[in-house]
Length: 71
Image (cartoon, rainbow, N blue to C red; front, side):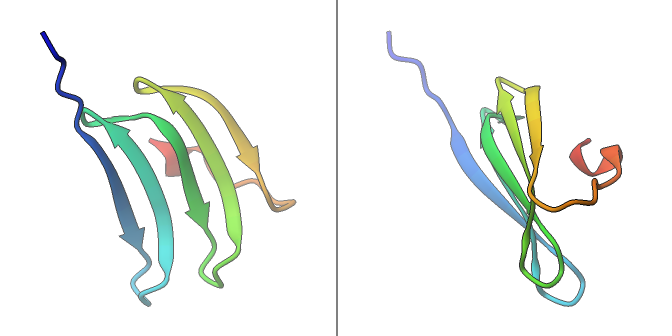
């Protein structure tokens, strides 16, 4: 039997229209590398997940965002 895997990329935007996040999902759970951006377009952080479980977060700018951004 083949397993159906539903992979999607969800994009979220700031109210001003700038890209805030690109989240990779597999079967509705975070899976792969999700990217988070500042309003000015700079890459802020990358979150690595496997099957819905966070493996690590890599910050690309000196300041760290509040943890709740990844919940």
